[in-house]
Amino acid sequence: MSVTTPNYAGKFKQYFIEITNPCHKQYEALRAFFCENVPAKEVAEKFGYTINAFYSLIKDFKKGCANNIYCEQFFNVKKTGRKEKDLTGDVTSLIIALRKQYLSVPDIKSVLDSQNHNVSTGYIFTIIKNEGFGRLPRRDLKSRVETQKGVRNKIPAAKSKILSLLPEYFSSQNIGLLCFIPYIKEYRLDEIIKDSAYPETREINKTSSILSFLALKLSNIRRYCADDLWCMDRGVGLFAGLNVLPKTAWFSSYSSRVTREMNLKFLKKLQDVWKEYGLLSDTTNLDFTTIPYWGEDAPLENNWSGKRHKALTSMLTVLAQDPDSGIINYGDAGVRHNNQAEVVLEFLDFYKKGTVEDIKYLVFDSKFTVQENLRKLEDNNVKFLTIRRRGKNIVNKLNKIPSEEWKRIRVADGDGKSRSLIVYEEKTTLRGYGKKIRQINIKGHGKIKPALLITNDFDSKLSDLVRKYARRWIIEKGISEQIEFFHLNRVSSSMVIKVDFDLTMTILAHNLYRLMALNIEGYSNKTAVTIYEKLLFNSGNIKITSDEIQISLKKKRNLPVMLSELQKFKDMHVSWLNNKKIIFSGYSAS
Image 1 (cartoon, rainbow, N blue to C red):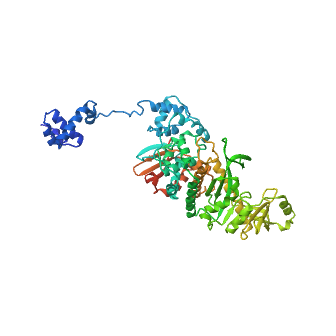
Image 2 (image 1 turned 45 degrees about the vertical axis):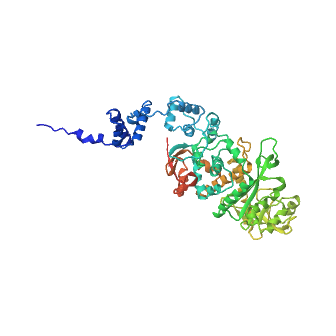
């Protein structure tokens, strides 16, 4: 009994005969010419080449054989095993150098990403372990920042340029900053920046320039040059549409081209947005703050600093804030002693060149302006509420008022409770005002001398007026944030920036934090530093695809709160990031 063997040769013969791709066709044509001695003209006709094209192929083949180019093309032998990531040893040396500066594995990963070294955290950990390094102790935020000083001096950062946004994958230690992108887009701040009068450079456009300044403000970098890793973090660069943020010299050079008129126009455009979204009420709180200057030979005046309880060589700055939303809608760092009293009128000019139908109430303290300007506010139909200085004669007069003429009222506190105050209301006159004015004398507020409120509002209830002035402390709280969190008084930093431009960027950063706070339930009364530490201080990974930017934030206690808020922006496309769709998600890593 015979066994029939299948004819495999006949079955698969066609596989070797048919031409499947251009590389196969080149191989067969050259083989016929060199091995079978077929004339070039016949080979060209058989395989569909022109005679000149085939001659060029022969020429390139002879030249390529010397360098094994065609050998690798026709017979490429794949090497087995894991691909070698560090052929020269430069990456390993860099990892060791960074670890010697007590940088963590994620911090090292961010630096390597900025240097275009695509290695994983596991690879970094293996190198560190093999070199005998131990695990770093648990550190707080301040300790981590201290260890990052000086890194840029030893490892040069990449040159800043517009990000190509080609598909890639990298990590960031400041990935929480990207959570502000939806708010910038939602409130059309990117359009305002694009249409502003701010300058731009050949390499960096206007939007990326302003967002670079904003990135530093939002990231809680206390002094621009204290944390040297900020210009190496790819995530911070992505916020501005760049590979990495520019260097210190660029920021100083850029700000020198900014004028007060540019800042004023920018603030007016922002104000239109705040009004459109109902973020400005009929009341505005006004106050001064002092920005100290620690340099030498500055043509500046001495101003009282409440924070340091003494007069300092400084710049006097005015801020205007809405008491309901906390939005700051005006700022000027150019106040001098000779025009200090006129600032309140300049603020009215800021509102549509003096048409003040949107302003009904201005609240400020006794030293903000002079009594003659109070009459000008009255003539412009603007209500004001301020405090009167307590002279000896006024205090003696109030002490003689019988106790039965004082009455007790209840005033609501910020926490929903109320407190009892003793008040006495009267009409009085002021020098330079020329009309009767309403004066409310308050006792039982914790001070030895009574407080004297004066206003041209004769219609509102006593409790409402007292509550309205008490809320003026909101702007002082906001000013405290400006100084501490947004490093507004760090004018001695090695990054020299015009103070008025620095103030404008600070106002924008403050307002972005307020927008986030107002949109997240339970955070409307939280400070910027609380929001940053609880929600935004985070690391993660970024994956750029052909049409999306996927942002994965590391697991954190309050991360679900942030992701729940960002869900409403899930279909948003970002104009300055090639109109790509931005997606936020969480991930956990060990």
